[in-house]
Image (cartoon, rainbow, N blue to C red; front, top):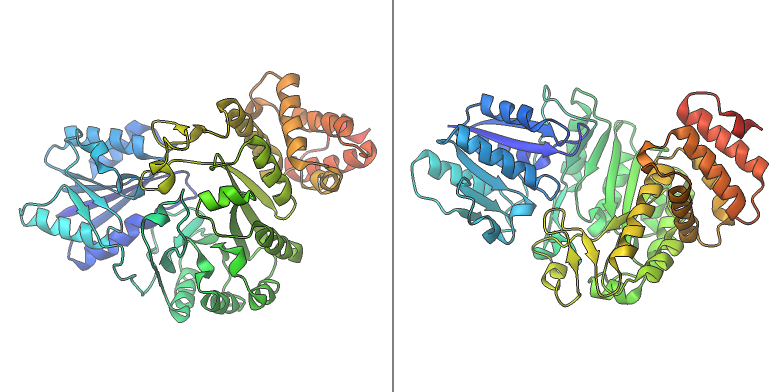
Length: 480
C-alpha cells in the first residue's frame, strides 16, 4: 500500500517536520511512503496535479491554521478524482473540536495529537480491510524517538531544517496548544549533539537548524550542556532556540557570551508586561526579569535576539499594550508584534464569550476586539505592525534606528506617529511604496517629529542604510 504524506508550507525556505516523523514510523511498519511538499504560493491546480500524479492509496494532509482551508479544498478535489483513495487529516488544527468536520464525508479519518503510532495503526487497519475509527487519537505521552534525524540526502529542502530535541512544554499558557497536554520528554545531550553532527553531513543548502522545542531550556543543565557542545568548531550551522528568559542561569549567560556572532538565534516570549494580563494568560513570569535577561544577552552583541508581544490578550487595552511595547523596545534585535489567535483546544478559546472576544470565524482565528480593546484599535495596531515589518524587522534602517532610539521618549508613539504620517502622506498601500520614497518619508517624519534630532546626522545614517541594503547610490535628498 502506497502512502503519500503532504505538507503545504508557508514558503520554499520551510520544510515540514511532522510528515517526516510519520514517515519513519510508517516505514518501520513496512509501508511504502512518499513525501510531497508544496507552498502556499503554488497554484492550487499545480498542487492538485502533483498529488494526483502519485496515485497513492492513502493521502495524509498535515494541517495548520495557515493552510487548513487549502488542505480542505485539495483533499475534497482529490477525493472526487480518486474516490478509492483514503483521505486522512492530521496536525494541530484538526486535533481539537473535530465536530467541525462531521459533514465532510470525503475525509476518511482524522488523526489527533501526536500521530506516529495512530497513523501506523490506521494504515495497518486500512491495508487489512479492518474497520477503523474516524477519529484516531494517540496518547500524548508516547515515547519520543531518540535516534537520528528525519531529513535525508537527496530531498529538496529549503534553507531552514527543523529538529525536535524535546516534546511538550512545562508551561500552560492560555493561548497556546501546548497547554492542552502536560509533561516534557527530552533527548539526551549526547543524542542531541550526535544529531547535530548528522545535520553537518547532509547535502544541500541548509542554513539554519531550528529547534521546535517549546521551551528548549526547560531543563537548564541539559540546555547548557548542549550549548557548550555547540561551541565546538565541528558544528558549523546556525541554530535557533525558543527559550524561557527566567530559566537562564549564570552558566547560561557565560556560555552564550562565547558563541561566534550569528551562530545562534534566541527567541523569547514576553507577550505583555501587564501583571493582570500575564496572570489571566497563565503566564507566571516576572516581565522585568525577562526584559533584563533579554537585554543582557542582546548587549553581548553576538546573538540575534527576538522578543514577542501579543496584542489582544485579556485585560490588555491599547494604552497597556503601548506600555508593554515601550518597556520591551530596545532590549532585542527584533520586537515582534503578534496578534492573539483563538485556537481550538486553548483556554482562551473556551473563554471567548466571557472575555467578549470577536475573532475571524475561519483560520487563523485572529482576535478582532475584546472587552478591553476595540476593533479600530486592533486595526491600528495591525497597521503599526506592517510599518514595523518594513522598517524595523527588515533591518534596512539599522543605522538610522540606532541613532534615533535613544531620542525616542516613547518608541510606541514614534511608530504610531510614523504609521499615521505615512497614511496621510501617501495613499498607496505600504507594500507599494518604493524604497526611495520610504526613505524620504522616514527622513521627513523623524527630523520633524523627534526632539533633538540632528538632520545632517540622520541623513548620514540613512545614506549608509540605503547604500548597504539597496545596492545603489543614495538619492540626492540623503546626500544634501
